[in-house]
Image (cartoon, rainbow, N blue to C red; front, top):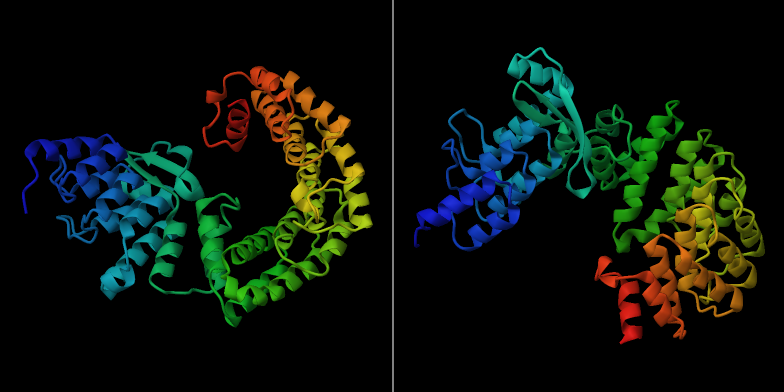
Amino acid sequence: MTEPSPDLTDRLVRAVIAKDAEAVRARLEQGAAPDTPGPDGLPLLCTAVAGLDHRTAELLVDAGADQDRDLPDGSTPLLRAVDTGSPALVRAVLGDEPRLRLPEAARHRLLDRARHWHETGAVEELRRRTGATGPVVVRRIDESDGDTLDELSLGGLTVRNGHGAVLTALEWSFVLFPPVEVVMARAVPGAEAGDSNWFAASYFLGRRQGPRVWSELTALRNRPDPVHRRFLASVLEIRNLFVPLYRRPEMSRDADFLADWALDEPDGHVLAAVLDVYSGHEHPDREAVGLRHVAHPEPDVRAEAAFCLSEERTARSEAATTALLGLVRDPDPGVRLTVAQVFAPRFTADGRLEPAIRDALVLLVRDEARSVRRRAAASLALSEDRSVPVLDALLSLLDEEDPDLRLEGAYALALRDDPRAALAAERVGPLDVFSEHDPRVFAVWRYLA
């Protein structure tokens, strides 16, 4: 095999240091060696790990960089990735089939390291490792795939506080299934649905099946701490999202559980989460549950009740329609936005808007909240309604300051082959400021062609 040229190797090193993932990809495709030493003599994968650069690390591993290589200090690139507390970085470096690739002692070492960081606390471990006593610099960041966590810097060392998520992910990769209580304890301190530790705990518990885990999960419903109950709702959401099609019939048990839970959940925020998950199920009591909560004092609950009263390609009952129409003037804009969303044609049996719903959307297109106007405009645009009130409402969008709303009006007119669509397009302004993948832009361009 031909050795890569020194120039190619130098360019790979510079690209990794610069965290330029595209340049790294190009150099690797040109034949640069993924295990090339960095400026410190260690493999470039260690450089990517030290820089918390999961994209570059993934490219190097995919190209063949050895994440299990023994380093002079007794660590490995993978162990160093665990130290960082970055779930995205650990996923990138972990590689394929880690349970089969790694000996038992190496697996335990990784688990013990992640557990130590989590149980000790990132701040305390940073102080122990650096000996620094000053204040820790904390920065909230978003990693890939929805991971949100704190980045902590002290004494020249930077880590992220996702060690609980790392530990949970490693356990899953090594086919270890701790009790629900143990996994949940890693998530609850953050108590944020978007937090990396919360997401990992709910995600991997949601992927587990079987009577034992179901029994442990459902017991959380009776916990006095609403955070525990909200965590249960997050797990059930994952179960609903990731259950394979051949197991869909078994989900009726989950739906029955959620319907019953919605009857007596006292906390409004938890109840909203329960209804959010429940509305994703087909269930005979769905409308009754929605009607029960449509006047709830918590706005999020009213919004989720609206989803319970709306199923795609399904006709609503008169009671459900009446209840939703009562929310058109709800004081909370989030509720009005939800109503505008569920009044879209896809939430009807035949795609047609009955007059009362059409009139409600026309009203919501002129709502004081721009987000509500946007949603109502999108629902009207996709309808086949060509009545005078609808056309007037669509034309009114052309006077909006928001170019997105003007585009929605032009799009709706183009769909209806209305001769005013050309003028509407002029009012939108340059179409190239929008994404070329926006179907509205394509429809207007096609009309003008």
